[in-house]
Image (cartoon, rainbow over all chains, first blue to last red; front, side, top):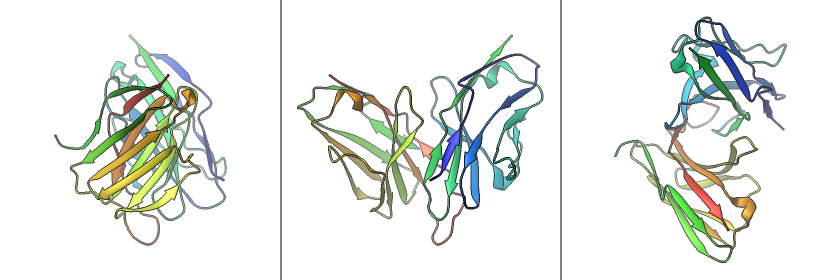
Length: 109
Length: 117
């Protein structure tokens, strides 16, 4: 069975500091990984997906199959990055996502 | 309103009540989902509907009964719930592909915060 683990429930950094939100997954097949974000009083929304290899709002994430990780990184955190971040895995055919427990990022001024 | 709309936003019910959660999407999507978000657990997928047909039931107790009358509407009927069912229930939709995995993006509603007394 697939599983997504986000080991940190809370990550607190100062503005301008680098950020890395960790995500590890367990899946025997070829995974598709996503990061979703929920800002205060807003809906959960897609931030980025590994297939697109994109940078959104300065965030990037690289799929490391050897380490089964998909960590989310940003070189210089901004206060508006404060939010809940969820890593998600889609396994196989279809459109079912397995989510991690989420990490709350707090960026202090 | 565009996007995914859920009503009610908040619901308090007793264990013997029967209530329904409603979800409506205005995005032209063909797949809809129910997720449960508890305070101490990750988001859990409950049900998936593709083209109005239920394709997944993630071992959800029968006291939760989904209904998808058309591709724009999704209901979750609740009866004889337990206090541990108190959670945020999120609806989502996507444009599902066919065949092998595609990269559908999920659009979420704001959720219904359910409290079972």
